[in-house]
Length: 316
Length: 170
Image: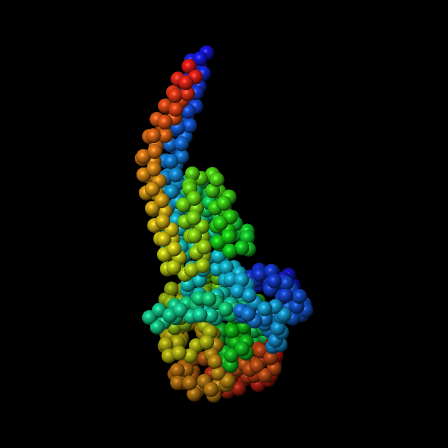
């Protein structure tokens, strides 16, 4: 892996105590570079997932190891994490996300935060720059098409969405497409991987991100204040999202978004999405599946649900 | 010749007396500084949402030495070291302590306060700062009383002790 990968790993390694670092660097080089997840659980061995394979490292995590991680991500200031602990995850520089579990504290029946954190799930941000480039002919036809990416969890929807956002915001020279203003509403800090509001992953120049903002509200905020040409949103599906989408379309804004689902027919069954489909808001549907690895596009449909391409292709 | 010697003795003892009195007032001054430092820390944490090293760095700029020094060393240690905030705090206290006019009571309060640093959520952290402040208030009261009672005595005592020695020697 290139130098960039080297730097990336360093930011992750520096989270851990020296004992864990030592274990991780002992991994075979290939596993190390393809790491997807590192799971740290108190009194249990380290678990590393790479390319779907699970490896356990022979080191039992102690309390001091967990404390070290917390100290590191909070910069020795636990009180800084109030908001993150309420959501249950933290995004660190490099766009990596750390999921947390432990004792949950309630206040008035609502989750106030997590104390005594005993499990960490470090999801390593995987950028696949360029995976969307071959699909540009379907996405762009004298203008960007309203696009919906459909697929079950872990099929690479967000990765594809991110690359589309990158291409739109930086333009595409070969087809002389100019860069457009892209507004990302990133409720779970997954698209842009923001730290203190600054995107950590690769995008073009014309990018604005509302980090950690509820989708429906965020879309309206973007439309009102940032005048985006294209709105990028992850995992729509609630009722209020639908209203915001219709609002955005009427404001002349292009939409690129993802949603959970197995197929186009699945979407028709969902009452919250039906109004959008019936109004034929979206011009393109990308259907993803995990059959041949994440990022497999099994079909592209147009606004009437008619097949445009049906070929199985692995993009990653 | 005798008179010059006598003058020297008088000057020295008087100076010592004044110095002892100054230490008393210096302690109250530093306690006051320490309290305002902790109050700033509270504000930085509660309203500024600043991490400890940033907050300490800012406080170090606002507060005079040697109290400011404690926070400066603390910030440096936090950035460099892999240890916890508690250890960094303890180490900076022991390093700077000799330069201060503060006493053991304050040290205990600060060490206890260090145990809680960076380990709690906002509300808890604020409570711990408030607790340390209350303890320091008590110390300050006591320091002020001492200053009032002993300050003058020390000054007079220095001169008078010198005078006694001079008389004895003559």
